[in-house]
Image (cartoon, rainbow over all chains, first blue to last red; front, side, top):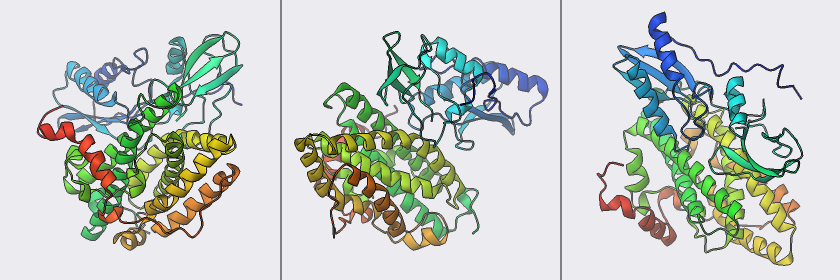
Length: 179
Length: 262
């Protein structure tokens, strides 16, 4: 098991192409303001959902790699990205959905994980994203950090969450699943 | 084997074959998703209510992704594909059309057989020469792993449980198996898809699926049906009455005003 401290995740960082530094910075600041509608404490950049920013003609294209293909929040997120980048002074903005790179929970930044935990959602395990079979038992409790926990349900209130019970602090909690 | 980095690199025959494949995949997921959604509010326990509702949402999301790719190939509108077609235009297998009949044991078994079929297919499609499809397959398989985990654990639990549970599951397996084999009904695109490296032959996928489900069913103490004739026809639009009834229900709101903006 690799300890949390020694792994530094930077998969959430994205390439910016074709924009001069000042314009690129303005777009980046705008993207940092867009949050996940279902977990409003975390930004889509911290979630690792931005795959890249580029220019086509006069338009700024934001490549977004979706968390769950069926996530109903995606349309809201797309509209929020367009709104934020337009407010930063870009007249033409489009969001392009990509599956390369595929989003996995390993793309969530360290800061994002800290925010998920503070929100009461156990962050996903590391390096068990995508196809790895994960052990959902003993997920550390976000409230007391105990691993004396049980999986109650693989599925939860949103597609990305499972439900657990902590035998130490006797609380139910939700976990952001490793995908 | 050459790869197709984008959809426009396909020639006309390959393009039609790819649309055939994507329509089958999208229609299976859409109808399976709808059947799952019929458990919303009615499943035997709350956790399963949530599970079937979540899987419904996932499958419909996957259908949407396949329809979007068809849109890029043919220009057809994804919403019209989902809601604007009559039963004979659907290419789903009869397996997903089978009514739930309030039999949760049957539905959880079907979900397991279906998710294993999807996992086998998506694993193969990750190596598809059609790069956008390979990328999508890699994405979707990561989500399917939770469906499979759910289905497998219930099949093992029920199969090794009381006589009543075991017998119900066994009956469900006899009922479902011939239809499940119909998931691998070859179409006229079968050879083209395999030769172009887009998707393996259906018979190859069926063999892989059988070698994946049989050990789990065996561990659940279930007898594997033998000498089963697949129920085919769905892939060429020969659809059961059950699909017609399902669509009448699913499309009722859309048909009030197909041009409405949502």
